[in-house]
Image (tube, rainbow, N blue to C red; front, top):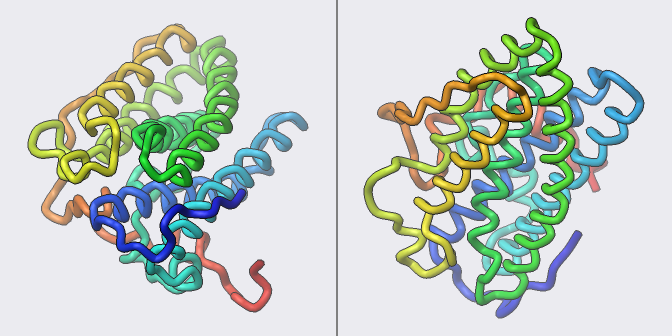
Length: 259
């Protein structure tokens, strides 16, 4: 998946760049989640679906990196040269899943939140950005359908449902944190780079997340009061640096054999 950026070499707004990096880096980690967990699939179709979602997210990541590289960034540095403190992935994916239900909850929330942010660029004046957003939406649609199918299966078992509810209670505030404080200014929208205000994207995320209750057949706790802490970085959409243990998973070990 590659796009030819419009007006290559032009300087991008910092807030716009930060949004794109947060989106790409979160999808980089999400792709690695799928790669690491594929062998935990419950059936052959699971293996095929998880591998497909893995490669799709890698493709989204690299398309955004290529766009940024055409606007002043070094591609090698973006993909292979940054340390854990420089990667802007969501806190949602910092900790590995504790079980299958947690895996489904976490990847679904990551797919949903990244799509919501990407959807804000569907009508971007740069057709390359709008094209990337559209492609993300087309492929994420099927990723979300995969998760929703599992909601119904998990909802058939009491133990599985409780595990799902527990995972959701922990992961949901981390996903919501990615959208930033509910109140205050929306500097990215004011800069004119996103077509939809961040608050509306956050509200849309809340609405979509709430729809899982019907499929699961059980209540889910949507804690909307998010603790951002002192180390929250709005430019990175995360608190603190990526854990070293996760960084060891996502980074390329040998750039000579990475293509």
